[in-house]
Image (tube, rainbow, N blue to C red; front, top):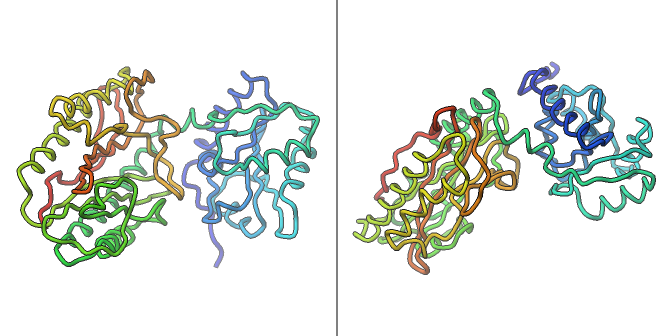
Length: 385
């Protein structure tokens, strides 16, 4: 039995994305772009692998079809997932930088104007230096962010994949909150979340479930570490399923035992702030205006000192180590970038009281022509375990 090609998008959609990059290259009078960012390679070609640390790139010429360079062990994945027919491989006994030089020389680009992604997490400064030294006649231009311009506004197919990811996320969240009870550990909750996500159809996660309890819940971006929950603890859970490499994150919280009145008031304020932000979202408003809709309420209620963060960030394509596209666009104070229909954001307001407790809630949503559509669908009640 042979594997049949599994294109996540139509070849027409992929070619349209490449054409948009080529239009940018024309405007920059640049002959080609070396795309090293894993998300961008996937976006333009469909190629994906769990071996993302291995050296790979997509070469997008100003005209014509792109070239994919990948490790030999990964080449079957190029056949399986990608529409690109020009695939060059390097073996483990080869120098991938020498292979890079050959790709450019063979295509008449050894003395051209070549763009690279200086913003890429997958192009190390060492490799960039070696590439530039190997091709001294090339005029190098940092065109980081070129592909991301297209990624910011999602196509209907991308938004549908995010909806499917959200359904998976909701199943995982339901399982995780069932495990929110005294005596269970953070690991029990994380295991329930992971099992729920996988059983509902998730692909490999972009990051493991984020689960913290008690005083640890007041520390952002820590996660499960065997702590057992006790009466009076808060529990914060933030997860995302993955569908065709797209994500739909969600954050919810629980309290073990009765919630104190102060906690209830803070939870209500978070709900109010999130609702205000959602109501503010529509094409033409700025990132800063959406942020202010939420943070303004928290300031009025004297809660901002427990918040002090951006409101949200773009989401879409997800590869480890995270699901966020905040480097492309986020929602934060005094930001004058304008929202457009088709953008997708995760809004996770949270309050953290030092050495006591922390909790938060979130929604993933897309900007529509007249407002927004909240994609995630899960009760915002503060769960009492």
